[in-house]
Image (cartoon, rainbow, N blue to C red):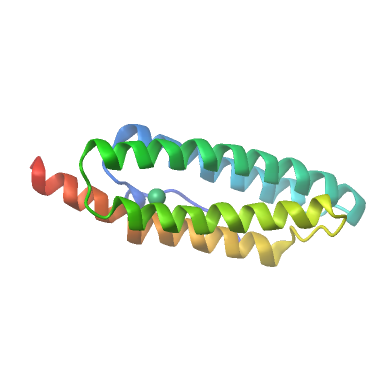
Length: 137
Ligand SMILES: [Fe+2]
């Protein structure tokens, strides 16, 4: 597991969405820092806080992106939303494990979250960017 470093490769050429992606990465990296070198009991609380932050920010960000895709009449918006739903469910399940006293926010889970998010920006979010650019060169 490692921190995520934002670069121009991740840009979708929309300032607000780029800023939201940067904020999300900040939340992820802060969780990463706080998890390093902590014992298990502390880690549980850090995990809950990190997940709540991540879940709330992800919900806000996905809703914004979904609205944006509607606004630009992006034809694959519904398919894109399904991918968001998949991640929403993934975070919800991790959260449920916490609430059931079975915390699983370890480096392996963080790695899964990191990989999904970065790949999603690079593969899926870039698609609406390309679509928008064709309309408005
Ligand atoms: Fe997205």
